[in-house]
Length: 184
Image: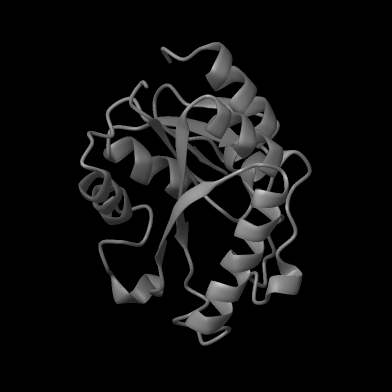
């Protein structure tokens, strides 16, 4: 059996609808149509799907780790219902003022993913809806993909994307491209 490939996704705005007020409960976590099915297609193509997500709502005391775990439990449950498996969720619980290395756009979460999976991230696709998602992946060697869902349209209009960033309407279209063009 071939070695599994890796793909790193942001969560809010890529897999689920985002909110300027944060996703603070399982009830607020609503998948973007087609996103979980896209993850299932990645799994069928031998991809391990990993999430890298800033979750500063914890530092801001908008929700706690128990609530974040409940949100992720809902995400995993809904993913499994369509045959999708999310291998792991990496998150930064810190606020921007904490100046940690794990908060995107810094590459700490991506370095941890590389270490945990014992792989180079060179050429690994990463999908996000914000500039910081793409920057942290790009610094880590990933190939950046921007989706127009979530904050993506605003991110695209603002510009300054990492070199080689490809843009698609949503995760489903991004996955379709990745699966048809595995060398990219």
